[in-house]
Amino acid sequence: MRAWLSRPVDAISLTWARVTLGLILSWEAVRYAYHGRIHAYYIEPGFTFPYFGFGWVQPLPGDWMVAVFGLIFIAGICVALGLVYRLASVLLFVSLSYVFLLDEAQYLNHIYLCCLLCFLLCFLPANRAHALDTRLGLSAPAPVVPAWTLALLRWQVGLVYFWGGVAKLNGDWLSAMPLLDWMEARRGMAVVGPLLAWDPTAWLMSYAGLLLDLLLFPLLSWRRSRSYALAAAILFHVLNAAIFTIGIFPFLMVAWTLLFLEPAQLRGLLRRPQLPSLPAVRPLSSAGVVLLGLWLAVQMALPLRHWAYPGDVAWTEEGHRFSWRMKLRSKQSNASFVARDVDTGQEWKIRPTDLLTRRQARKMSTRPDMIVLFAHHIEAQLRARGHREVEVRALVMASLNGRKKQLLIDPDVDLTQEERVLWPAASWIVPLSRALHPGDRRSHANSGGQ
Image 1 (spheres, rainbow, N blue to C red):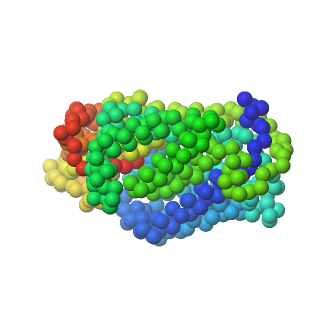
Image 2: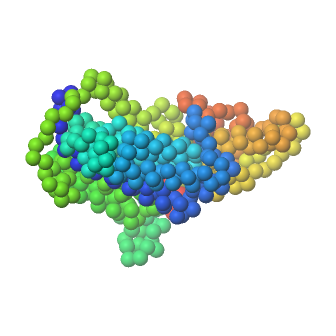
């Protein structure tokens, strides 16, 4: 294994990874600015939902968040060009991860994936070929890299497909939900709308997506099936981009799925001359093998952690994030909160939009851990106004994948006494009791998410 990981491979694949990721993230920074998302997501909110253990990560004041996205844009361009690559790759990883960690309400699987890929590129020799660093003498040119560098990136992408398929092995997805609702909501699309709204289309897409995700990684890894698997992956992402609003994810996955091509094939696709020979490279150390194994073990284990929690992960959300559970559930919720001054008995009914943006309120109302954080925020606001002891209760009625609404949170529990923890302790989450029934179907055009 160590010898296989240490064999030389053409550096063109790492060059492709570097250029495509840098350009896509620069493009994403421009998109956020153009659509006003920097202000709407990170400047306008007076409160953000930090990730567990990252409460110290807070938005910069004023318009400094615009500067952060400017840094992402510049760093992405420098990474793509291979210009001061080591510094640029670190800055891209740090700035993107900072933005990602600011608010759970803005969680997206593909931004999490980009953070992981940026982290890996910090350690890879992706600036040894077709990079400005080599022309400026900042890096020694080398036409080859160790095989482990390409294998690591392939595994990282392959696991996204595989775990995305495993996550689809649930009763709702096998019943074509929520795709039946989502396709019905697209009936008005020009030309293809009636076809998308035809029930067999949703059933076909559900099972085709399941099989594709489960099988794509091994099929891409086998030479004889690679070209067919690659064509299927490209078609899959093109259809996703046309039907759903999922940002840069289809473009990123198409670009990085091409890493499964043999480097010589990628050279041919890019119309670059083939290398006459592959000189030897430095062998991977034993410590390097251990580190690679640890990284892959973590990536294999994280998507399994939801099994440690009781209940349906799509309902409780415990273990949902960082698990490649993409476009699997449609949730709608109505949430209201009642705060009470214990000393005086005075009560206040609080609507989430009184203290949050509409997007934050919509995301929070379906995610129990964020509901608890918001209850603590209400408590802090009232304490700042002089109320010494405050109770906060929530009335949250939610629907999962077309089911009739039911309680999500125990309305009798004072949420200020509850803390967000990593172990199974959320007894205040009401278990999902309503079974999926075809008669419950209704359109949730905008409630599906990552």
